[in-house]
Image 1 (cartoon, one colour):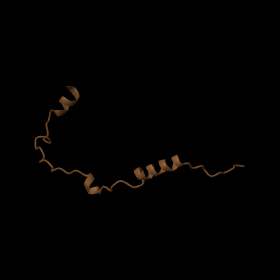
Image 2 (spheres, helix red, strand yellow):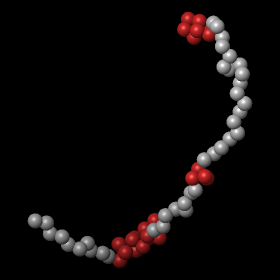
Image 3 (cartoon, one colour):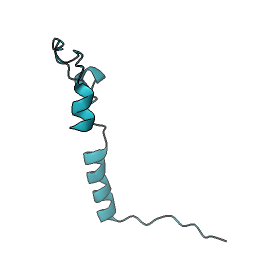
Image 4 (tube, helix red, strand yellow):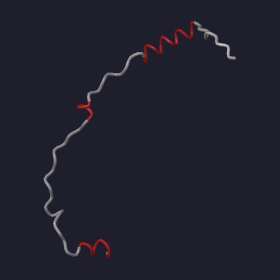
Length: 63
């Protein structure tokens, strides 16, 4: 069987609790989802990047 008692409070405990409430008693300011996303303009596609090269497999696998 357990015996439950009320915790003792002292003047120091209540002062510390008041400091904690003052520091952590409120939530931080809300940040909107729109403010968390950064957008940048897209670049034009490079036509040489997707061009087919007949000997590319030689360079990739044999070189």
